[in-house]
Image 1 (cartoon, rainbow, N blue to C red):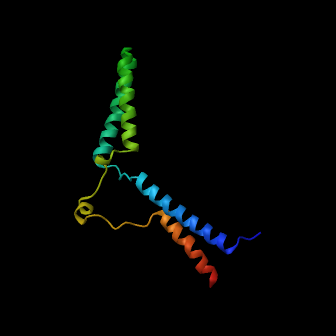
Image 2: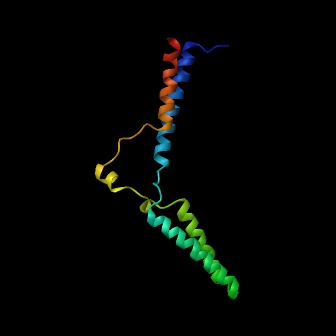
Image 3: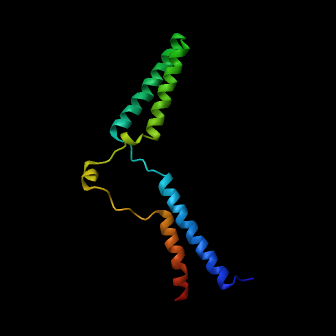
Length: 124
């Protein structure tokens, strides 16, 4: 059973509202971190290898606390490599000097635009 014109219009309005609200939620929640800078990569490698060395030394001398500290250092190094903090993420000098970049349309915005254009394309 097809929808009436009023029901179709109401459904379209609800979908537009949903896409708009979802896009707002995504932009407020999902703060982008940049790529890892050289400092973050270097610190993570030092943490990984230093932690591994401490772990091996802790096992060799049979002092568990040294092994635990080594494991914690390895974990911190891996975490730093996977998700560098914002202050250690790279932003080139050129990007900082140029000022803020123009905002690209988010994925949800582009989907919403395509959704709204679908009716125009089918009318042709």
